[in-house]
Amino acid sequence: MFFFFTCGTQDFSGALKGFENIRVVCPRCHNSSVVAIKRRNFFTFCFIPIIPLSWGEELRCTICQYHQSTNKGQLISMQSQGVPAGPPPQSHPQFK
Figure 1 (cartoon, rainbow, N blue to C red):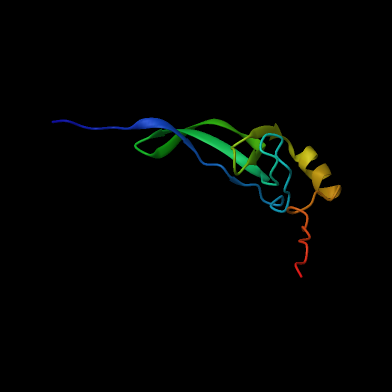
Figure 2: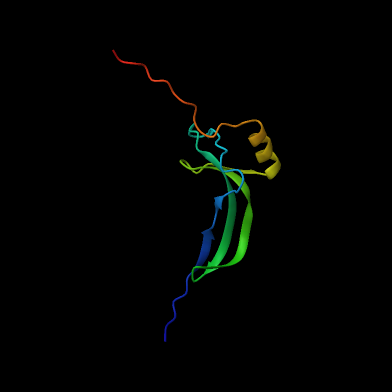
């Protein structure tokens, strides 16, 4: 009889509640696509999360996957400073 088991790690990261509107310009790719996420990595056995390996808050670029650890204090100060919720509107020249 042969049993096949799979082990590994899995990223269960998701949006950080309360900070969904924060968008920051990425220092690597220069797009306004860095968002606040709650990072959670687990050791998995047969695709079932068993042991948490790491967790915390971080800023992650949705385009180039740049990431930087942060904390709620920094996120609250970003939110109170009015970090824009997206790229600024761009004016396009009118063609005549």
